[in-house]
Image 1 (cartoon, rainbow, N blue to C red):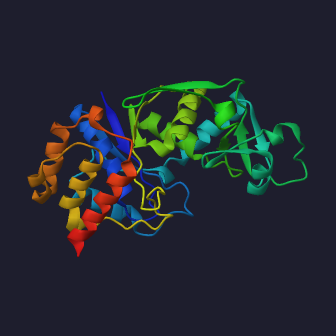
Image 2: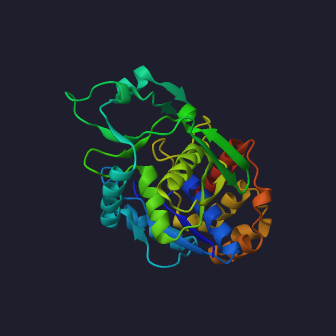
Image 3: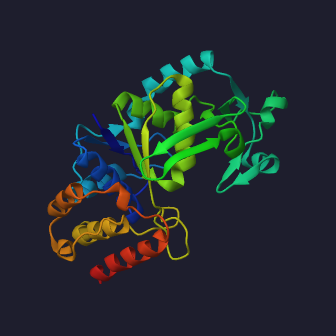
Length: 308
């Protein structure tokens, strides 16, 4: 059975980019008669904004993105992470890393927005410095492949694109990659739908799933929503929150961004009718990736016009 999920971080309200991911994952799950779960990635409490949990859930409900089962909170899964930390420390080649961000930049090369870790701490003593993380020593080469439902087969060598990546913080808190695959495993997630900016994360997670013996997820990466400067729409870039009062027009714009060609009369329908149409007419093959920033600007601008 298809089991999908939407896993926002409660660091603020949802924006248009978040909605596109939610709509895409919802439609892909429901069109295949699958379940759609909500997980709130609140493990990093420093990023959590008070009230964001309930705000996100209320917004999804108002947009007719109805989930199955109870929402899952990462902050309540710590017993799972503790079990796996003890297990993996015994079974994997993991080493302490004392590198600060400055040290990583000094000894590494940049791959897009991410530094390729050089393995500095594998060959340098760290006894007199505080441990900042624990990294997994990857095999060389470290080939990994995923068969994306829209983009097709994607193959990479993580030694060249990432380097040894972090598994734990000094206090034992799992990295995003480890926590994500463990949560997906225990929730029975079969399909992960996310933005294509997380493609490298997906490759890391697919490799990590294989290394520790978990079933690989199937992936669908969606076009990235960008602002007029060409940057990814995000909370860090001060993206405007979506508004419950504009649910219908914003859903219409999200479907348009995903190249689903909703009929114009759908724009004024209620959110439930819009999402029923979206599920019945969902086509992964229609998704277009080139020029997605142009479509995003049109969609966002259109939504704001409705608000004036």
